[in-house]
Image (cartoon, rainbow, N blue to C red; front, top):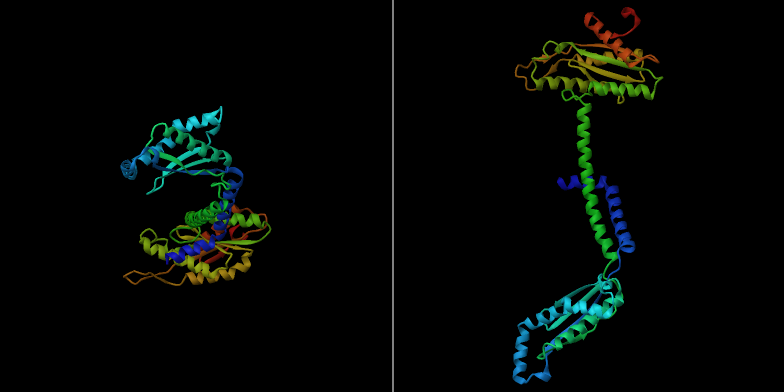
Length: 371
């Protein structure tokens, strides 16, 4: 179930994943081709062996055994990588040794061999090869003056590298593609979760928790927006007063109260059109807004609403098995062209008062008998 949920999120956010992946790949290619300085590596290899000219047969065996202890090889490797050898080499090659500050040297001993590997990395391929060979020759000369039992010599001299080891656009683009894909999926999931959270927060601001109808503030805002969008259109506003629960509202358990109010909201939505709006007007009152509807044409619809709401309601969980009769009283009025919202609301509330004070259950505002 979780996999299907995330697959749907990925399906909805495919465009974000694609955009993130393309951006990552493009940034990688731009960085590789236009920002990164190509770096080259030249490698020279050296071999350490006993000096046959200065060693008899018995000493030859001891020398070979000493080489197996790796201390000699490690010492020669340290000589190759010493600051003295490297700096003196740079001084011999140039009057300004800082010209080689961009070049990095590294020395390693190949496992289970008497071979030492010297690498020089830098922006100029010719200079890297020259430095590797010059440092190696300088180290060989230095060692020969100190040790006569062992020889160190070139096994392979450094060649001028033809291809840089960095950047590698294809490899970088591949890694960027994978990283962009992962980031895109993460952003898609985050966006979906954030959108869901914002929707819930927005719904809390718009929807009344008890009745699940719109709050009055949002209801009035929608009504004003309707008039702004179509200032010349007619609309009808109605307020439904639930006379049957007015006296028992404060004594009803919250669970029963929620059942009643949500049943009212559900009934109103079933009786109204899709573009009609239902809102919680007050504790025991609901508002309905019928866009593009005159008061005369809304009369029959409001009568049907009252009939539907007047049906007895059985409450779930009520051990007494009683029924609630809402006895709705409805007042409504249609907005005339140029009329303000406040005037319309005042007319509807006067119609509701008249329905509460008279035998008429549904009252439409008009000049008589209100004026």
